[in-house]
Length: 87
Image 1 (tube, rainbow, N blue to C red):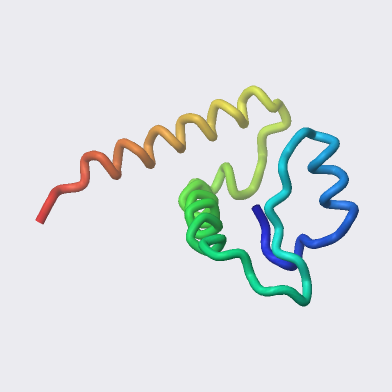
Image 2: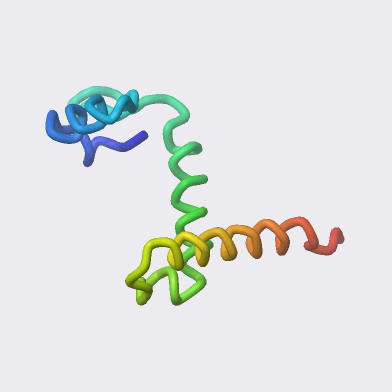
């Protein structure tokens, strides 16, 4: 999913090549309804992951270590959300 900034045939062709259905608003046409709500979730997730400095600035050269740190960060984010005290 993407906004009008990603509307180019290069992006659409690459997504199609990878068997991904592109849901991108076209320039000069009305926006896709509800796209903002879905994009907000994705942007919020990236913001939460970037709270962990080691993930925001990738120091790890090995991909397996970086993937492990992303999994650990996602686990911590979920754990904090689930253990949030209810008012």
